[in-house]
Image (cartoon, rainbow, N blue to C red; front, side):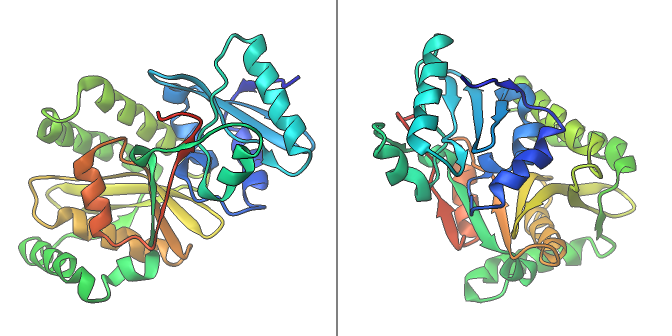
Length: 294
């Protein structure tokens, strides 16, 4: 029997102890990701001596179970998850599964499928901090244009008192993007940002704001697990040339002091976002597998 409870703030540090024992690249395994998106995905968790179990509600799909996280009798843990699904009337769906654990899960009886819509993109924080190399020439030029047009722009660490400033920025961002993103999406983002800002210090979140005396051009918020800084939100003004590239570079210069790698979360099937993330030359694209094609 698995005694699940609603994933909450206090579970973040507990889960982190399980995650840090092994290398997990998918953003969905980041304890902070689960917390800041908990109102949308409604994750539940259970801690046992051998394993940690997580299940979450995937919109338009149903309840999904993470593979057991930890060390112990994997087959028994897997059967316990199957039984939990049966007792609660859920179809037994496994996901997300990272590449390292695909064979392990398939041996237990599930056929897994790759879903490119949920891939996690991993970058070198050192390379992004100065856009080193020929492959980043266009990014460097975009930053140079931004800096020339906005000579007084600076970046600074995010603090809790910046929340009002970020809300004002989000109003303008929404106006620029309302044709692409619907209203529920915008409010999901706002709710996630509020959670990040409410627990900025308690969860060791960090980030940067790109701004001058006139306006805010963008901001990023991230968390660190192991040697990876996962960006939870990274937004810039679409109508300001070079703002996105400058924001990425400024964030990377902060992150490189804390982590070797930077992780961008999945693009949820957005082909434009996928092309953008690929243009920053990831050192690794971690695939997302599930027991059927989500």
